[in-house]
Image (cartoon, rainbow, N blue to C red; front, side, top):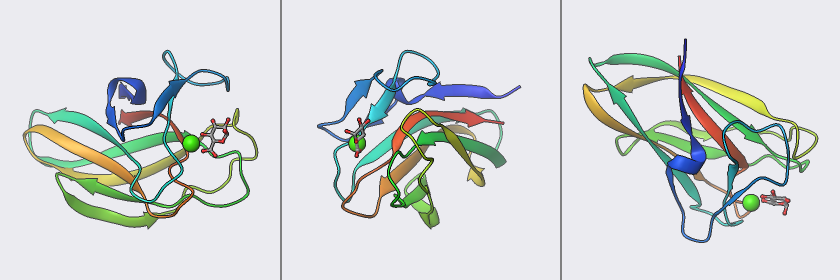
Length: 128
Ligand code: GCU
Ligand code: CA
């Protein structure tokens, strides 16, 4: 099974809040970043051995405007401007899945907003 890293236990841009006003999230809430370029959530993902891993980011975007983010691993962008399209409602959560290269030990996986709308609401990162 997947190992889950809740966004509320990750690190995130100053000014973010952990909210629970839109249901359907995992854990105790989700991270609501400021609406700004550069808003981010960064997860620490440990790996016992180096290699590719499948990760899933759970998010909601209740607007009709996409909120693309650069996805980086250990400081290198591995998926620039990855789409986080509107999900129809803030209570509707969707998955973005990608394969990332991890090193043995602790990795940092960061999702950084590339538009002034900031990040979507972020619930968790699952490592498959
Ligand atoms: C609303 C919504 C928040 C969301 C924000 C946004 O305020 O309630 O959960 O983060 O919009 O546009 O980012
Ligand atoms: Ca927000």
